[in-house]
Image (cartoon, rainbow, N blue to C red):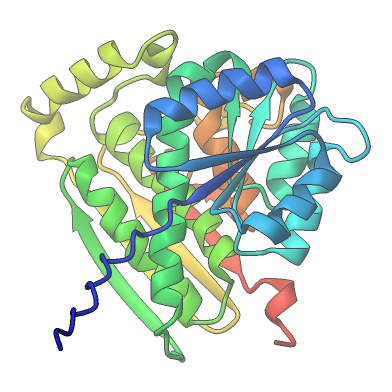
Amino acid sequence: MTVTPSPIPPPATPELPVILVTDDSLLEQRYVGKILDQHGGVKVVYAHNGEEAIASIIRSQPALLLTDLNMPQMDGLTLVEKVREQFPRVPVVLMTGSGNEHVAVAALRAGAADYVPKQSLARDLLKVLDRVLSVGQAANRRYQVLKGMTRRSSQYILENDTALVPPLVAQFREDLIEMGLCDLTGAMRAGIALEEALLNAVYHGNLEVSSELRVGSDSEFHKLAHERRNTEPYGARRVRISARLAPEQATFVILDQGPGFDVTKLPDPTDPEFLERPSGRGLLLMRAFMDEVHYNATGNRVTLVKRRDRSLVNG
C-alpha cells in the first residue's frame, strides 16, 4: 500500500493593512483610491458617511481611517470624536477643503492624527499615510511588551541629519507609553508634534531654510538644506534635546544654534489663512497635539509639555 504524504501548506500570507476611506462623493473616493493604488501593499475599503465608517471599522479593523470633513448624517469632526473614544488604536487622517478650516482644527484637537489639504492630495497623501501607518505598526508591536516606569530623563545632541529624527521620536513615543502618560494614539500624536519641532530646529533653526520655499514644490527647499549641511556656519550647528518624563507629565526642550526669530511675530496657526500653508502646518500640529508649546524670547528654544491623558487618570 502506497501512502501519499500530505502536501505541506504554503506559508501564510500576511494580511495587508486596511485603509478605510470615508467620503460621500464617489468621485472623491475614486480619486483617492487611484492615489492609494500607487502605494501598493494596502487594502482599501470605502464608506459614504460617518455611520458607515463606524460599522466598517468593526468589520474590517482598519489600520487607518482617511476621512472627509463635510458629510451627511455624521460629519468628520463627530466621526473623529467617536473613533477616538471607541477605537483609540485607529488613527484618523483628515482630508481638508477650503471653507472647513475651523472644523479641521477642532478635529485635530479632538484626536485626528494628521491632515492633508485636498488640493495637495496627489503630492502629500502617500507621504502622510506612510508616516502614520509606520508609527501605528511600530507602536502596536511595542505595546505588547511594555513595562512600567516611575521616571525617566534623557539628553541628546543631534547633527543636522533629518534621518536621525524618526528613531529619536520613536524612543520618545515608547517612553510616553511606558510611563502611562498616553495610549498608542496619544503617543503617535505627541510623536508627530515632536517630529515637527525637531525638523523645525534643523531646517529653520540651524540651516535657516524658509518654509516659503515649499510652496508649490519641495525641491528648492531640500536643495538649499543639502547645500547648507556642508557649509559653515550652518553645518557645525547642533540640536540639543532634553526629555523629562514623570507619571503626570512629560517635558521636552529642543534648542537649536540658529539665530532664532521674533516670537512676537509668530502667527496664530489656527487662523484659517495658515491651515493650507506649509509655514503653519508644524506649529498647528504641535499646539494641537501637546498641552503646552512655548518659545524662549530669542526663538531658538521650544518647550513642549504633554500631560497625562485624562482617560488614563483612573485607568
